[in-house]
Length: 501
Image (tube, rainbow, N blue to C red; front, side):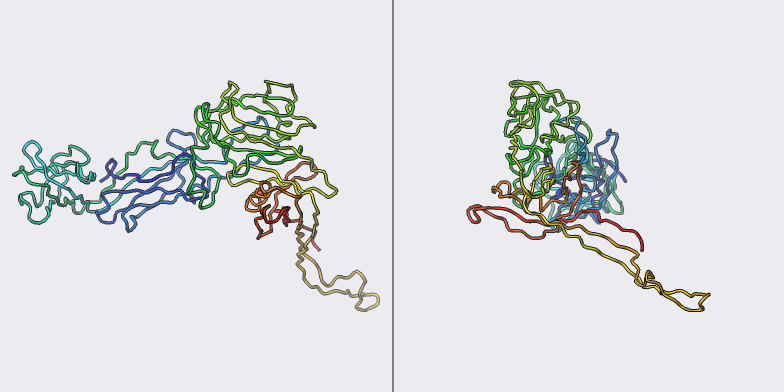
């Protein structure tokens, strides 16, 4: 029989915004695990009912663990629907909504079990009939409905043995109380027992409010220690959020860039989203509107605030509060960025980009990588770099020589080929070295080495995917090393092909 109820209690669930590449744990508890073959059926969904893109992600069967809880880690299912937004040419607005960087998800929950049992804590008087209750004791909900044919077994030495044996559920005053079709005897101290419905498979669809089973995940990952201390409320930006509210940025809040760089900072938005942006440069303090309100799968904005991004901006109109336009020019030495309440006050932290000269006699290698919380940051290596090409050839041997019918002879030419190349792949490997770095900038190099998404910018401004092949590194400290720099090696993610031989 299928019924609706709320016998399962959600003991633990994600709160706020969760980095999807760490564990995403849900813990369940139900009094019905004492029944036979108990299991939870968990249906994971993208979105919530009513969303246009509401769809089933996965169906999981969860058994109670030895401690009696249902423990689910759903992050492997959720992460398949989360990637990253990488559109270098798309700078319509400074603060632009993105959909790929996070997932709003929910779940439906059902209990399925056989031979339903319920342990009561005491009997009680209900209009002349006897009832059983857990109210004020264990507060465990029962799985029964009116009309169920059950068997009552009280604990040994019960005061009223007439309650024992087969009977019928006469009433269910609450989820914690039942009344059977037997007369009430004398009052007793608390006496417990078991009520069992034999030969029945029961399915209880859990009627849990949708707000209690709707969650948000994003494309972040944290170290073990950082994940233990993760507090997503520190990242929720709204029209009234404090000035300490953080962008989804793992690295430093002040770092060096060049005039040719892009910087993309992600942020989590509340429904009462911040309405404006403040940007300060050498030329003054400027504001522009933030027009998006989160809805559906949009709850993250990507803020493209690098010098190139501001110059490429297509739709935003900047208004000087002090100084005069343009916001950025060839002489700009810094950019400060923050969310605003629209009245000139900040509703987020301020991120500062120090624009430095990357002049060098060597070829520059401009990296652009996704950090641990999904933002994209630039790094320039402007010291010695060397390129090495590795050729992987596939060959076969063929017979050579031809028959000359005029001379009636077998002959050879100088251009006959015996060993023939039928496939060749070229792998370009580049080793490059950074300039001298502060510890802050050195930490960004470490972040980049651990990033799954790294690009380099070529001389035309295009971004090319690479794979960093450096597999070990030393975390350098100024107190130990005085001067800090790093040398890394990378390959292009796409290999070059050749003609057939």
